[in-house]
Length: 251
Image (cartoon, rainbow, N blue to C red; front, side):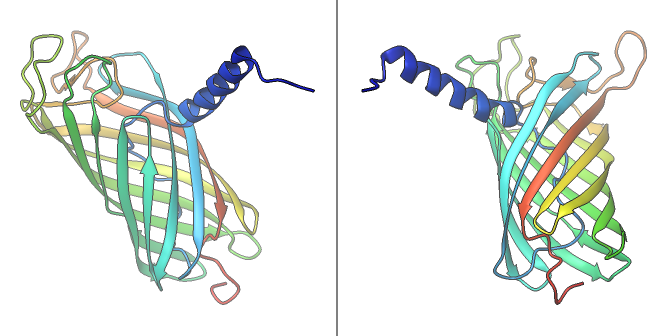
């Protein structure tokens, strides 16, 4: 008979933690793992992504990832929930145009989380974003899609945490970012998609960006010593399982 030893249990627990952490290691979600088409009513989709992110004028990249789900509430409207290690995001898809050749949708989202410096500062970070997703369909059944997502993002901290580790008081950082994502959604099967994507965002107003999941508690908006403007850059590979808004009646 096989008996589970503490070492076996510990290894299993570590493996599960690593698996979850791989998809949820960074918490600021700037991109969208979806096409420009809302899900069909009463259907569900699971999605996940993993990649890298560079926040600010630093040249270092950190892992990023997320897992989430979406549910079709009505024709042209779905809601979703995305989870990372330090944040939870509520999102939606609002269909504006739906056709065989192209789709257009708004994808509003709001998230809340904590800074990830692993101390006792407990600074709450909020972020709101409004992407306009424009999808160009291609393929024999128009099953694939090139997705462009110009996006407006606001990010701020709530001033209720303790003094940050570098002596900066919470509540001093907020920013408005403008940017876009670009992705190609490839339908491998009727219920499975892969979606490589890239996102680039530039701060245009504010005092700084409180970066959830980054090494530092904020990203300074001013150019660095080399004169280069701070940029948020994200590169990821997403996958989705389930309905894709392209049921038999939608094709």
